[in-house]
Length: 113
Image (cartoon, rainbow, N blue to C red):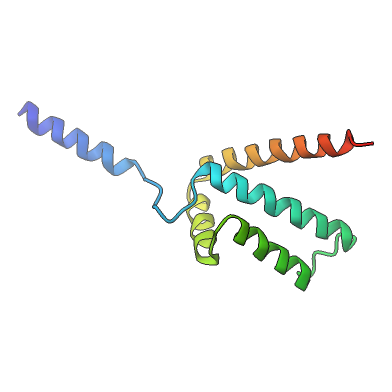
């Protein structure tokens, strides 16, 4: 009976744990990708005077370059966004890390002569 109860508890515990699929970026890689992506998007937003209505060919090309730098496909990026949209606590932690990294980059840029 004790063995049956142990197996039942193990089964319930494993069902609750929603593991990240192998083709989804881990938190660190997602933060790396998003940091680079946000820097590029910020650059083009400033260059276009915050004209976010339509992505320019330059912006789209730069986003493709960021994906290429990180060896990512559009499908893997989409799967990663889909996964993290279903796991908001994890995504918030990633966004907090990205914000921290961008703050550090901004501080470094402001320190330049």
